[in-house]
Amino acid sequence: MRYLIFLPALFVFLFASCDSGNRTAYVELYTIYNGFDYTKEIKTELDAYKSNAEILKQNFEKKSDSLYGLLESRGKSSNSDILSEIERIKNEYAVKENDFVNSYTARARQLDELIWKRINVLVSEYGKENGYSYVFGAEGSGTIMYCDSNLNITDEVLTYINNKYQGNNEK
Image 1 (spheres, rainbow, N blue to C red):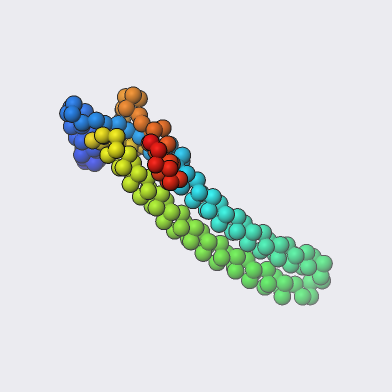
Image 2: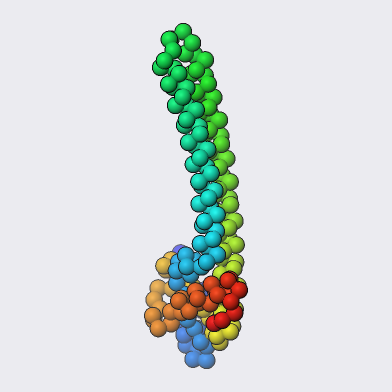
């Protein structure tokens, strides 16, 4: 049953290979994704977002540490107030951390979709401009198990999409 998933891709690949009139090639999706300038810009944005979360975490840790210091310096008579405040701070941080993880994950997924949409459009343009009938994406998932390295146009496509992204219409 699980082989049925791969049959359409295998059929397309075999059909494309047998028809000598079709020009085919492939790109390494991982290399395209990570080498795309837009991906690098987005990752910078996400890293800045993470840095803000780290600052928030440090602030909560400072508050908590100062309350623990106060707890140690005081006598046992008023410890319950301080322990309650420490517990409140921990709960507040847990809520904010959960909110951050959820929003970060959603934002990262949204940005990832934008990156792939741009890549797909630009690779499609490249394929049309360069006379390809098919440009396959090899990602190591088993869909394409082998490709002749002479058909690998990853570097050319990466240069093309980065030039297009940067506003340069050179090939």
